[in-house]
Image 1 (spheres, helix red, strand yellow):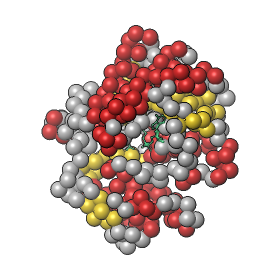
Image 2 (spheres, rainbow, N blue to C red; image 1 turned 180 degrees about the vertical axis):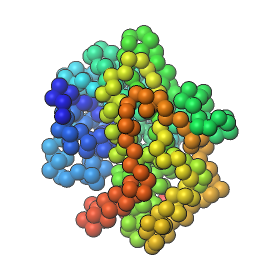
Image 3 (cartoon, rainbow, N blue to C red; image 1 turned 120 degrees about the horizontal axis):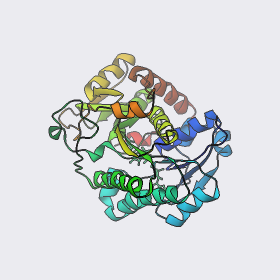
Image 4 (cartoon, rainbow, N blue to C red; image 1 turned 135 degrees about the vertical axis):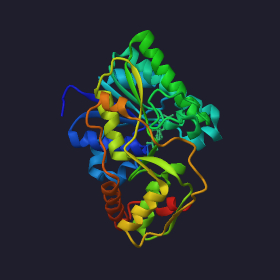
Length: 326
Ligand SMILES: NC(=O)c1ccc[n+]([C@@H]2O[C@H](COP(=O)([O-])OP(=O)(O)OC[C@H]3O[C@@H](n4cnc5c(N)ncnc54)[C@H](O)[C@@H]3O)[C@@H](O)[C@H]2O)c1
């Protein structure tokens, strides 16, 4: 615990955000957990009701520049982990709202950092900033490979990265942007790539499950990713850098095989003809140079941890299994 630190988390009701809250609580670090939503469904999966009640939650819409600035200023914030955002299907369904939340919202966070002297800032970009695998013949894909987004969500994330670059150039606001690929773990329940987490949940629930894609992918455990964001904010990076993530580079098929080997009752299938449109084999040397000991729970251990947590949640009727219906 470091008593001089006080974190502000945006998107704290989300999957990664809930894990940041979990870890900061465990450390005893001071923080304010903010989100537009006030539904603690995801935090409830990984925290007790007493722990949730002890957290300072604040309803904050990141599209409201004044509110973001006030949240940082009024509470003596020293570090920001910026995770609030709308995922691919939501940006596609409502591009204007997607731009307001993902682009303008990130500008608001950078402005708040600039005007309140915050030197520890990490924010979520995404692998969706990159294009399809054939554009990247060199493996592992270097950190500075050109961006080539194929979705509005990816375009907005590139805008975040470029905005952060200019905030360093013009006002020396330092930042580290992380590009998760496929985050899995308890609390991951939205978007196509959540199928990996759901396959583990379905197995724990004794239900069949079909993963809608196949082929290469990189998996990052939600708990590990949350720690990466915390450590990146603490790095107080002097510059604006964006980092690819790596951890488990595998295939959906190998994941299904491993899950079935660990839990022979698993009834998980996948669509091997539908490949994810991103390269999976990414070089994370830059991240390793910025934060030592990049958190990485090996895939087998992480699956077993998740399975055990899901079993407890299912028995306690604390998790909604409706999410397994696609
Ligand atoms: N999960 C992944 O695999 C993955 C991969 C790449 C990038 N990312 C990025 O990481 C970040 C966190 O991901 P996640 O999986 O935790 O997402 P999530 O969808 O679980 O959580 C996002 C949170 O943002 C909040 N939010 C939406 N609009 C808001 C607004 N106007 N103001 C404040 N909060 C708002 C939502 O209520 C939600 O709690 C996102 O920016 C996402 O784009 C995630």
